[in-house]
Amino acid sequence: MQQYSSLPEQNSQIDATPKLLTTIQQVRADLWLEKSLNQLQSRLNDCLLSACNTVSQSLAAEAEIFQTAIDQINTAVDNSHVAFVQFAVGVALLEPRQTFATVCYVSRSPFSGSQAPLLEVRVTAQKKLPLRLQQTIEIKDLQQLENQQIPSAWRLTDDSGGVIGWLVIATAPLGSDSEPLIASQAQLRSQFMARSTKQCNTALLQLRHILSWQQRYEQLSSSNEELERTNQLKNQFLANTSHEIRTPLSSIIGFTHLLLAQGYEPSKERQQEYLNIIQSSGKHLLALINDILDLSKIEANQLEVQWETVDVPLLCSNVLALVKEKAANKGLKLVLELDPDITTLVADPLRLKQMLLNLLFNALKFTSKGSVGLRVASEGVFVHFTVWDTGTGISPEDQALLFHPYFQIANAVAGVEGTGLGLTVTRKLAEIHGGSVKVESEVDRGSRFMLVLPLKKVEEAEEAGGAEEAEEAKCFLSNLVVTPSSSPHILLVENDLPNGDLMQIYLSKLGYKVTWAKSAAKMWEALTQQEPAVILMDVYLPDGNGLKLVQELRENPQYQNIPVIAQTAMAMKGDRETCIAAGVNDYISKPIDLPLLASLVAKYSKVPQLNDGE
Image 1 (tube, helix red, strand yellow):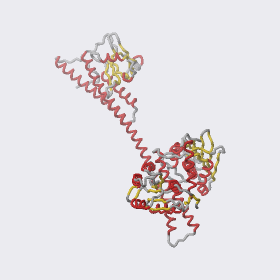
Image 2: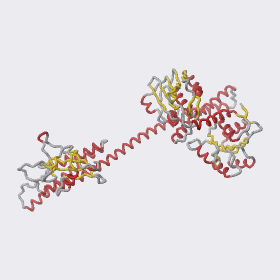
Image 3: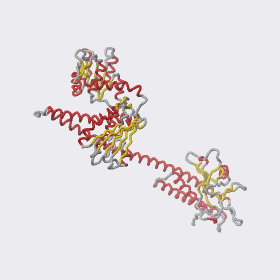
Image 4: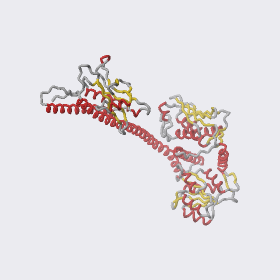
């Protein structure tokens, strides 16, 4: 049976009875309808497949759906009476008071120039609308076209029922010798348009699902790439941290072994040298741990900042003294350029020293010859601390990642050392101070890191005085000895033998009477024999939890007023607050800062008389 690609004609010459003619016409109509719809669906599927295989933009993909549908429908119904199908922008996209839509797509006509026929849609017997690109049509006219006995417009809707627009079909003006469309032919066309509209609606819905999944896939891909990068950096961080920890541990264990070895009797000078190495290695380990903890505390907004009036020249001199040996070992010259007008600023001196040391150690690490300097200058209400070097410099690519956690620059001069957290912590500390850190660098021409901090803080009047006094007291009490007449009694609750031995020896040397209880049971036993002036409480004990013991002490009228200082390895974010909430008076983290321990014990034991010691 012959098939046609255009709307079947009703006046075909067929030699048959009227009943047979009707049957054949119906079959031809059904075949045309199904074939045309299948062809439309096939073309729409091609558009969807194309959208799946490419990263499509929503507007471009929808435009392809609309134009494909219009061209395919136009091809199906193309004869001397039908010219094109067009799409109008949906009323849902318009302002409420607007009453017109715009023609956005038309079928690609085989005609061109002046040969293109004038195509129009008849709204009423008196009103015809030309259909051209950018032609406006009133919404009421579109609604009237929908509601005609044989519609000329069919609306497209989204999955929520909102109007996207309309498919509108028009006919070319007929000549005097043209036959009008008969009713059955128009009804067949209307049936085809209604089903085509459903196919377009379905295709648009599927397209939006595809675009949504594409967007999610892109987001997941981006997240996966970032997770993979972070995972690589963390793996590198763990490897570097392991290396950094093992290096000083090797010195600590090795030189301790030498000092303990039988038959080996080094001179007093050698012993002092070994002990200095052990102490230096221990401080290096502590610095690594502090970098990690500082970042954790900063990110949790739990870092404590002690605002004080800082002597800038003194602090800068102290900082350079700490890096002097490293610079000398590499043959580098250290330079300090200080604006004489800058004498003080309000900051946390410990954190300011930490930031400057991070920048100076980095400069020394990446400089093999020449100089490393610290320049301090005033810029309005800010102080600029500039650390410069004549080292290898930093590429623009590395500068973009420089302040990311765990990121490290490796080269022949520096190798790979450290945790990769120093600059991250430095920038965050600067931001906490209300400042910033900037970098300027060129490869092989050195680098300049600028730490910018405000001269004053609003809180300085309230906090500077007390913090300054505390720092002075800490320095003064670092070498205290208590006279025998005062000799307060200290109860040390500690189950770790080396730490307990260290604190007992140190406090005894200062003149305190120390009772060492290695368990909770021993603590209660000691309390029945003598009431201490201060209790040093470890948190983790073999037969109890130190914080629960503090709570029990506070509930007992006999012991509730005894000052308790928690001395513990708990040093993560929130640990200090946890200890204070349990009822302790103060907190000191391990490894124990012995001068700070002496200061706290003296404070809470209320020593009446103090003498300078060794």
